[in-house]
Amino acid sequence: MITIGITGGIGSGKSTVCEVWAGLGAFVLNADDLAKEVMVTDAEVKKQLIDSFGSESFLEGGKLNTQHLANEAFEKGRVKELNAIVHPKLPAAASQKIEEAEAQGYDIFVYEAALLLENLKPGSLDYIVLVLADKGHRIERVKQRDNSSEEEIRQRMKKQRNFEKATDRVDYVIRNNGTLEELEKKAEIIYQSFLPERDTQKS
Ligand code: ATP
Image (cartoon, rainbow, N blue to C red; front, side):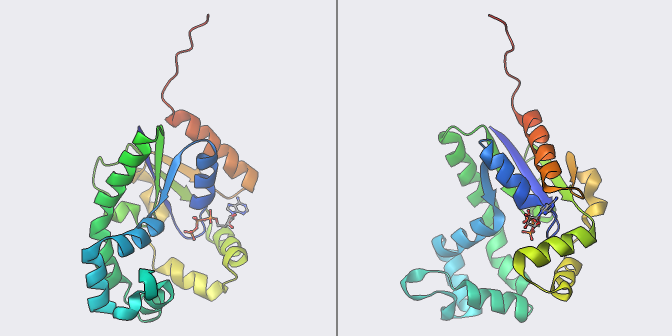
């Protein structure tokens, strides 16, 4: 089983690359989805969320009240508090998913996370891929995708690291300043390089 981490700034194209890889047979795990899962399955996390963010963190039936938590985190500036509760649980939860993917016969496991470089334990993933795109492209693409304003996007970008300065910490860099088709092609080529070498014996 080969494990890949993929990171990059908002609107850089991470999810698009992951969609290509999923189509080629990879097991893809998104860090935000994993965090949401941990928030409802881990009793300790649940208790801490209720203690810090109130019982309204959960809806009737135990479903996560994402609207309430997003409001607390982003509108009230409590992202760090929320992350401090959930992030320590992610490595073990991700390891569990890797085991599940392996048991299901996947060859490639992909972990998609904007905060990958912050939370990464050295050697925990085989390869790290960084997706980069110019600011202007990212703003236009996110505007279209989320219907959000340029100002909102710029504010979110400001809170992220400068990924251009992280190229020496990764194994692959994908530059996504061209067409969607060009990105898909680059994703396919990199994917092939992950795959274990197959016997090319002629019969
Ligand atoms: P986020 O961190 O915000 O989740 P992301 O890095 O996962 O972003 P994507 O969702 O893959 O980024 O891409 C952002 C948007 O831009 C999507 O709607 C995607 O379809 C589009 N997009 C990505 N690459 C290109 C491209 N080369 N040309 C046109 N549109 C693109």
